[in-house]
Image 1: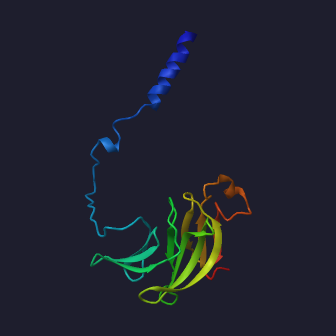
Image 2: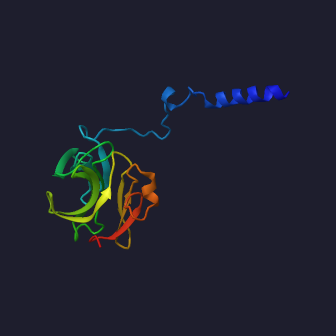
Image 3: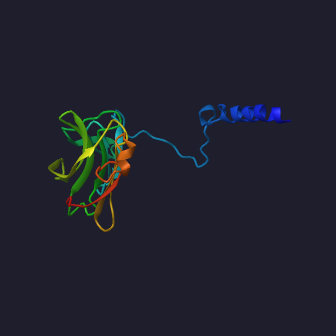
Amino acid sequence: MKRFVLPICLLLFVAACSKNNTGPADQEIQNPVGLNATIIASGLSFPWEVVYGPDQQIWFTQRGGKISKLNIQTKTVTTIFTIPDVTATGEGGLLGMTLHPDFQANPFVYVVYDYLQNGVYKEKVVRYTYNGTTLTSPSILIDQIPANGNHNGSRLMISADRKLFVTTGDAGVAANAQSLSSLSGKVLRLNLDGT
């Protein structure tokens, strides 16, 4: 009996690890609620963050450095600004974006992006002012965050008490998340002016 236990366990292990050919890629996916997909914009280059703006338009970033708006009614995309020092490498580039919650009174657009500084890949959080057509007055809120071709985090959120939360990835170095001397692998909390 004992000599059959190992072969049986091995057989069960192999069966458990074998490919299941009945997954969604091999079957037609059913749509029980009747949803339909409609393309409303095309020709985009790696859209990353999507924010529904107070102007009833969809604001979005593209990793190469463009910040654009999509008019839902006309389906037209308007690039409102291109950040010149963005470096899109691997999964990096222009990533997170959020708008000030009181955008009418404070037309601030917060972004996080990766760039090269003396050959070293870095990340920073910048606040821009929207003047109705483009972004102006860049103000660097936090800089020198280690970046990499992957694991950059880069999501932004403003809380109800008006704090900016920034997620940073470990920049491909898992130990960064445990190191208090690194801004990587953290959730950072800032005032909206960067202090």
